[in-house]
Image (cartoon, rainbow, N blue to C red; front, top):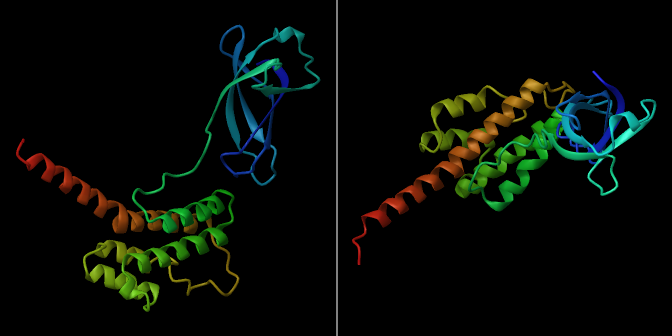
Length: 223
């Protein structure tokens, strides 16, 4: 494996650090000039890798192996950037969300990626709270778990969804005020619950409405 100091700057898809510095001391040749390298994020809170594809504009033999060389897309780059992956670890936002809910979605997702699980869980709880209030305004004066139960009784969510809500830290009553740390698994589960809840409340009803609309259009006689 050839040895050469490489660096690359981009937003880290793992920790979301902007202009993060990635580095490596080796690369794999794909052809005479085209190569790929695994570069690690320099943030001590991350240290995860991305794969960068690049091209030697100048012959590899002209590079000093004791120096650090930048992979860049500029016109004068000696190491020409081709592509890198992953570019983002963002999860897809459920479709057809109200604008306010969609805007709230990314902050806890970003906190989860950066391992700030307290902030992530707080954000997911707030998102579930606001979403249930916006979906059914008459329930706004009830506590979140009471709203969840009412949505179950009205058939808006399944009994399994309501049971799920009761078995995670959705209402914030257990361990939220005694300094107990949250784990990655708890944050991940609350993230999955929130995504599923938004899908039940907003995405699926709109998809059904659009499907019925298309069906009605197809039933219309030709004029």
